[in-house]
Image 1 (tube, rainbow, N blue to C red):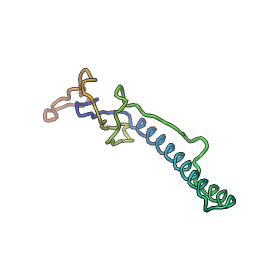
Image 2 (cartoon, rainbow, N blue to C red):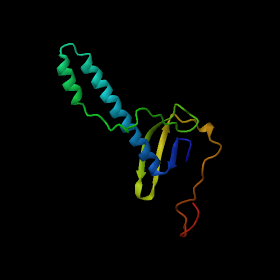
Image 3 (cartoon, rainbow, N blue to C red):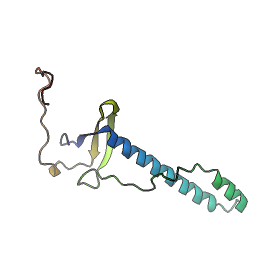
Image 4 (cartoon, rainbow, N blue to C red):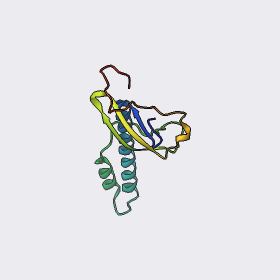
Length: 122
């Protein structure tokens, strides 16, 4: 965690995995909803229902069906803003709601207006 506003830093590949899982879950849920709508449509004959169900865009069988992301101790916290810099495997994001009381201390960054030689710890 970077500050009391809920900003954090992590590895970009973590956000990529979360995004992939969410896309897969959304695709699986959409097919289930679409299939249920077709099956409950009394205006369609059985043959028409089978044909319509067969045309649905099914995700691969290896797709994740359910997932849950917990961003720390606060189970209600949700990722509201994120930006990944894949080349550096670095990402930043912000959680809401965020309770700063759950963090003992936040990092203190050096003054960027002062010279900072290469290799200096930030």
